[in-house]
Structures are given as C-alpha cells and as structure tokens.
View 1 (cartoon, rainbow, N blue to C red):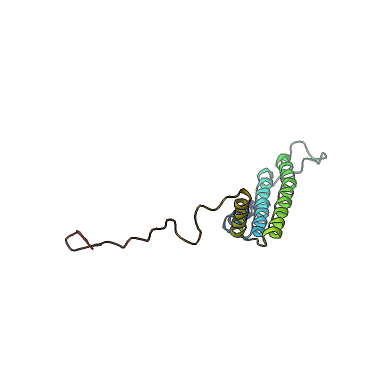
View 2: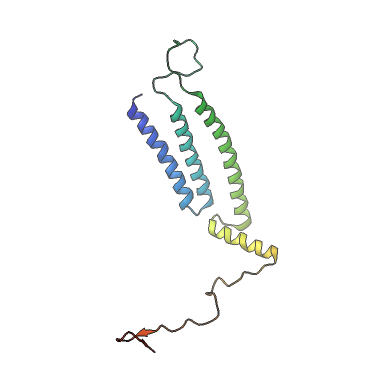
Length: 156
C-alpha cells in the first residue's frame, strides 16, 4: 500500500480517538459515554497497529521467506490483543454499572444520577445539605444599588 493510504489510516485512527474523547467529555448520558469510550479505544488500538506496521514487510510467522526481507513488528500486535481483552472487561464493568444506576435511580443522565447518589449519601450519613438548592446563600435581602451623581459622589 502506498503512503497516502497509510496517511488516511492514521487520520482515521486519530479521528476515532478525537470522536471518542469528545463524546466522553460532552455527553451527559451514561450509555453514550460507554459507547464513546469504545470508539476511543478502537482508535487507540488502530494507532498502535499502524505504529508497528511496515507497508513493504511480511508477517514474522512466515519462515519460508528470504532472510533479508523486512518483517512487521509483532510487539504492537500483542499489545493490541491485550488492550482488546482489557477493553472488553472495562466495557462490561461500565455497562453493568450503567444498568445498576438505571435500576436504582431510573435515569441515565449523569447529573441527575449524581444528585440522587449525593442525596442517598446524605441520608445514609444523617447529614443535611448546608444550604437550600432553591435559594441563594444567606438570609439577607440584596442591598439596593448605589448610583453615582455627576460629580462622582454617591447619590442615595
């Protein structure tokens, strides 16, 4: 394959990583965050494979080739196989946590679930929130604004 095809693969791998990280950062939906994690993982795995691949080389398992021919580096391939196994485990754990959150709190919105979890922790610890979420802090009314007159002094 030519180097332009390799460049397309590298751009695609980096694009997958960026899409996945963007999805993790910007999404509030927990299941979408797990899917974005899987996309970012696929991009990282593709980058690792591309880092060890040589376009004009042969696989190192072929022994009937000429001794002077270049071979593909097998270490990134082994790393990607390990990363895939670890990634499947992480995704299974994340999905099981998402299912438990949905069963317990009835929502997959991260902010709502976080608030429900905080309320549960407060109830379990016997702690009341330090201030109301509906009113601003403090009990004093907001002072009236002061107006400056034309000479620069304050006018009441």
